[in-house]
Image 1 (cartoon, rainbow, N blue to C red):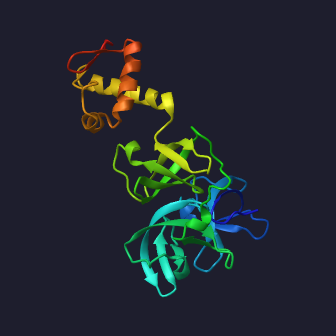
Image 2 (image 1 turned 180 degrees about the vertical axis):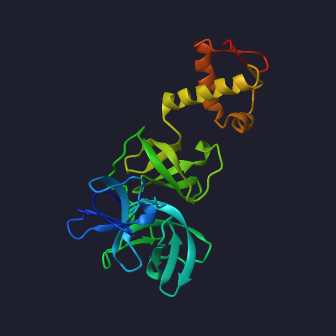
Image 3 (image 1 turned 180 degrees about the horizontal axis):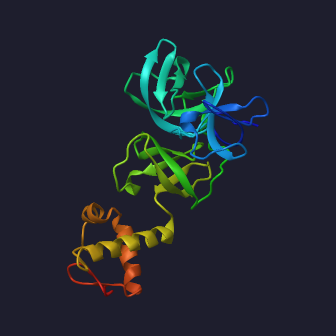
Length: 278
């Protein structure tokens, strides 16, 4: 069964001058010639994205859109009509946001966070700025320490409301933020805590010692690039540490403490130095 607005692996059933037809259980879906991978032939299986073209026919492409059905992404408006707005999502045909699916109206050039979905009336891929109906914490699919996809939703009094795996909501508290973030930005993080009422706290990066291991490699690399010495230690301010290492002071102390135990670095009165020979 073809999944519209998603990636499908389909078999090439015939070749024509203007492309390839892919198996769909009927006459086939066209993959235009400009998107045909070099050397593709009848009988091959190809991974393609399927959507409707401007004439409302199903069409395949090897282009990769900014998002697929079910995902929440930040897109830019390219044009506006009385019926709605068209947004660039990386394909030949722009994605449509009906007027009824906008919050306060969209303007050309504006960037908005939208959910990609299938319009039940038309069966076509569309987008909506009204995210709440798609987000719920009633039945969670995550647990503490799970690595998740995070999208910045909006700023609050205590931090940022975050979208988790395109389906749940959580909070990234201000004291857990050590770099500039903005609405619509996406990155990896993990679930720090789940409360009895299913509210979730999240953190940027990887959990626990896995994150420290990654940071250890960074500290050793920076030491090597600076002749084996760096003027940072426990007495350095959090801002100084974050400005140079891109990590919190807590993570810095955990990381350097681990490297010290492994005898890869030594502490001095003014900083840290490498004990490894080139």
